Amino acid sequence: MPPSSSPLVVLPIVGTRPEAVKMAPLINLLKARPDEFKVIVAVTGQHREMLDQVMIGAFGVHYDHDLAIMTQGQSLTQITTRALDGLEPILKQEKPDIVLGQGDTTTVLAASLAASYQKIAFGHVEAGLRTDNKFDPFPEELNRRLTTQITDLHFAPTPQAVENLKREGVRDEAIYLTGNTVIDALLQVSKQREAATEGLKTILVTTHRRENLGAPLENIALALRDILEKFPETQIVLPMHPNPAVREVLLRVLGDHPRAQLIEPLDYLPFVRAMEGAHLILTDSGGVQEEAPSLGIPVLVLRRTTERPEGVTAGTARLIGTEREDIVEAASQLLSDAGAYNSMSHAANPYGDGKSGERIAQAILHWAGRGPRPQDFVA
Image 1: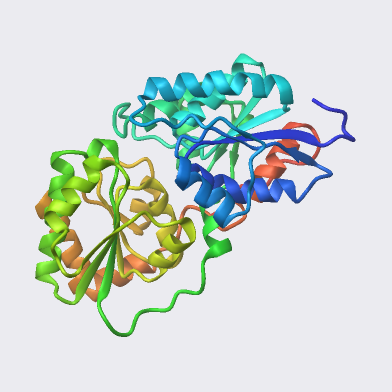
Image 2 (image 1 turned 30 degrees about the horizontal axis):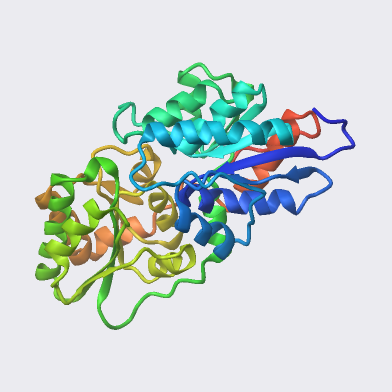
């Protein structure tokens, strides 16, 4: 730990677009306080173009170190070993007081291991999410469970996440209830949403998860086509993930439908605009489950399990799985029943208030003995 008069050296490590969305506001907040923090940013480049779109394009965050580990068709083993190899000399050179990682990617697991091997403290942003099925989602559930075991500061987004960590034996004093930084990001870039008064109702869809490839994705695509046929006043906007296994199914099933817009992946800012203009969102993304409630948009989750049950409990999201009939039934209810729609769109957001980064900054200072413990986030 540096002398109390010197800034704390903080080294955030980012690999993928979702991490970038949730880490960039925190990085900018820490950089805006140079008397307290010296920030050195490292990226693994696990998602190359999509990472740059968010970090540089949307938030103006530039890198001090770029491992550029992305190669075509790389395995989880290759991502992990290349990230570890690349991070070791960076940590030896920079000697940070604390390393930060976000979420549940292979990058965050590698970052926590690399920090621990150098006996450097590790702070986990969005700690404590669980499905309690280590292979669903895969490899995310494995990554976050393993990361918890070697984390020093756990920045939990919700009370449920806090309880998950306590259940696994994490000490109370190491857990900080901060809310989720994804809401910080969203509120920084979103405009006031205005309800559409004319034209087609837009259903925004994102689907890309590894466990949904194959038959589940086929079911999702067929259900989307059924919804379009059943509700002629709707259109689907679907930014397609670059994965060829995703694109083949979506293009084959939906490519010829005049009200299915299968588009290239959107940068973060255009995607926020797409969410703002949507009437309904269907997704297997974790981040979208957290973002949409802040915009008052119901979310149907295309998964069998979710590590974000708070949205389901609060009524902002429904877990509907990947069966064709279930998807059509759930979407049909929200498209035809105003009461059901309003009950979801007006539910309180349990994930954050836009001040999560401030709590994390204060938690780091508290850990370093430089200030009081931050107040817990209250939904």
